[in-house]
Length: 592
Image (cartoon, rainbow, N blue to C red; front, side, top):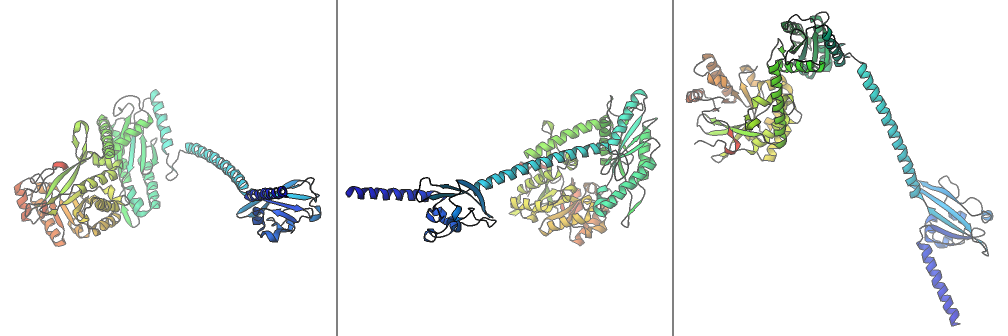
């Protein structure tokens, strides 16, 4: 009896362990009799049926299980045919969002009396989702590759078509490709039958202003008109082409002498300069023209075989020299320009390195209150370390910075160094004056960058003076005025630099968004010697006093000039009399 009790206890423990093990399995397990009535199930099966155990036991398994997403029963057939079905399996989708898919397997229990069937329902949603995602990923990758291949074919087709196009769509003139083919053909023919010819690189001055002021449609109309005028001004057999933007190239053949090219340039200038009406205004366009000669008339520059590309490069370089010198008759390329280009290349390289290494040198020159002789502030003057340690003044590199679009980075570094260099005198903080390029004023976010630099340096914007030229205001008055106004509202003072050398008249002073002017040193040098210039300074100081503008005289070198300016009620001055520009580390102090 004791042995039987022990066996029963062991059997109960075994059944309990089996029950626990079956409950720990994630698959839904169930056993039914021959009529499909549920005899046993584990917890995952109850979760699938969403019913408690007591409501499931004895019920038909076909009734307990949920339907598929299409409304069909998970197990096909009826209670009478359930046991007649051999072992099998099927996959059924229960839900689409979120996805739920189960795999159902059933197997009769052999030699069981009464007969019974074991069911296993496994959730394979993750597996199905992964396979589906993998298939979709492969499909996307395949489609992406197809699109990339298609784009590559389109790019090749566009390049092929572009290579066939030899005409500018706006003006109808030959484009760069057409020009290159013409020059290469001309150079090839020159080897057999020498022919002197000239390449004239023509840049349309101030074309951007037309686009900005009157719109791109007006700009296109101007390009078409300039093309017509150039064609009419050239001789038969000459070629006019448009490289793009505001650049045209004229190839003039059969020259008897080199000076003929300059005569042609003057004729082009005269034709282009005729009045052109747009938006109620009358404009007189002009060209900057660079000339490169080739052939028996004597090629300019170093001798040797010249390629089409080299001829265009030389003419382009000469054009920049003409633009810098404001030449209307054209500039020939020669060896001096080549040397100048080499120097420019070295300066530009040094400038890039100095900006990257933040090795620009800052010099400070005092600005003095003429009535008391005390220093009120300093002007920051940047120097570029050149070859052999020689420091270059801004006149040598600012133009390169503007043309290479480095002026924004250069200006920001100078501004940051200047703000950090602020000095104090007699318990008060001195002002710092920084020069600003016209190009900087047109760059988006200029005013914000200035004020952010003041904030980083902990400088009150009222201690900062920005010196701008008249050209900066006159060239784009609306946009420039908006930028300057926002800076002035923040406290920054704006001074008009080199006043008297540009386009402004005294009558415009009341309209300009400035707080003061700086009289150019050429006027200061003429004090007491040139009555007209002395009268101009007197008129400027009197008008500025009435308008509430401060006046700073540049280039004061003698005590006589100092006293003369004091007598004219000029507020401030700077020059060698008060101090030369000195390096930041040992800059000038208050002389009192």
